[in-house]
Amino acid sequence: MTGTILFTIACLVALGLLFSVVLYFVAQKFKVEEDPRIGIVESIMPGANCGGCGHAGCHAFAESVVKAPDMEGFFCPVGGNATMAKVAEALGRAVEEKAPMVAVVRCHGTFDNRERTNHYDGYSSCKVMSSLYTGDTGCKYGCLGKGDCVDACQFDAIHIDERRGIAEVDESKCVACGACVKVCPKGVIELRSKGFKGRRVYVSCINKDKGAVTRKACTVGCIGCGKCVKECQFGAITLENNVAYIDFSKCKLCRKCFDACPTKAIWAVNFPPRVASPAAPAAAPVAKPETESSPKSE
Image (cartoon, rainbow, N blue to C red):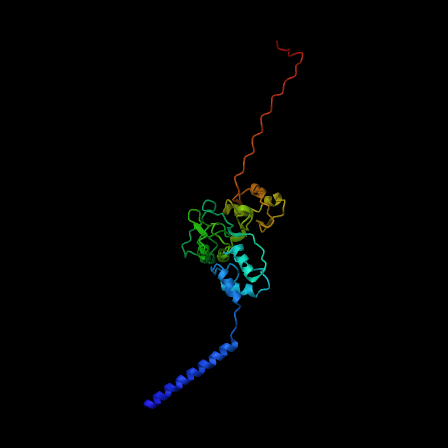
């Protein structure tokens, strides 16, 4: 009996050693050598793994950019131009700087501007609420205010203002990763150019209803009147499906559209206060010519 047990153990040990040797040679034959530059690039990346670059994470981004022939189409929104410059230097390539972007909530339907027509008492999620019905106001396009975007943001850059009932972006923290854009079921969040000195002009509404319906649902909604389109001299504004849209690549920040909008659906952000033009000086009195009926004074 003892001999049988020892023989069994010896056989198992021998088989284990044999399989180990076989696996070693198979691994050596079929192993894939990883380009050492991938590790270098990954070490440069911020490590957020947010997916804002369009890849599964920083390693996947590093692997793709190393294998690509150039830097076109690659950008890390978290690290920005500084990180991309280091990546380009590590790979011996050239890279173009990109204008910084920021998330913008294109809805200003606060409690003051949008009357609540009912009370939602379900699970606090924009996705769930949107799947059940259009919302708790007369506008079926606006921000639902349940905070899916807040949960998606890794940088604490977006919050729900409880007093106003809508999402608001902290541009000082926003890295334009696009996570909030992807998760919003209403599509009210957009990535736009941060603009010169942080200044930007955009239509804070996506309501596609006709003007009268929009105005009834929200006092600051775009009514599709087209006044902004007529005012813009640069072809930056289009009107489609009853709502205006400003192309930030064409906008010159003149703010004529902002002045023309009757509902104040157009927002001009981070502009300095306008200086009131000085009042024109009062005209000097004109001397009355002397006539025969107005004798000279002594």
